Length: 347
Image (cartoon, rainbow, N blue to C red):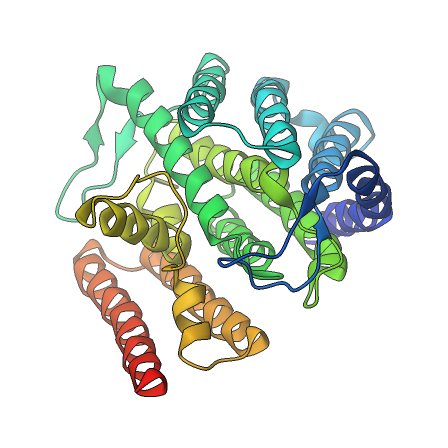
């Protein structure tokens, strides 16, 4: 615990110190997010906040690996894989923050980053089966890894529509993953979760409402990639410790939001990769909640899902369907209530 706290603080302080430089760079090159119909902010706000988080996370991770301390024993291959996979994702984010990158280009780069992870040992050799033994994926490990990275990265990107929201959701998920990793003695999961959580905390100082800088696509792409990599770390060992069910539940809010957005656009005949104002935070705002109250509701939901993931890791498999059903019911109730209140406000 003390070491996890040390590296989290180091990552947070470094992110806090680097963010003003990222903000100045964004202003200088014109990487600004302007107000619009789907935007909550009222003034043009610099992007590129993700650069400060990415530099802090990778710098602290590598420094901890070479300096005296517990991280000296870590295998460098997974860390090297995350670093190599991060480079195209960061380049993609910077280009998108400067202008606009087509959805198919994004998917291609995300898939390439995922394949890079597989080269360095990441994968999905097992899938959780709540009703019995784990399922061995065999040749499907690589496509499942690509699907997982792409899905999670885009889920983080979609939920990044309110000051401090994605930062807090990712930090909460990191806390859940850290607790799960600690329960299984997986130091690598604890190591990266701590560093990423610290970076989110440091960035939140600048990103809290009203935000002075956004993480932009640079940040959401990097956070999504890193979270997906952390969740794959234990799974790659072929053990039952951290299969995809647990991060799937811990990240239930952004994943559900992304899935609903995909289905909503498909049913309405709209481009599935286009934007709209139907995300969970938009619905809560339409229901009359303030941005701060909306943030509180979604953080609470994320904490509930994260706590459930930790519970599922310790509970008998027979509990899994019930816990997931209850979580789905809670999320459905929140969305239904928000929709009802929004209709009453309009009538």
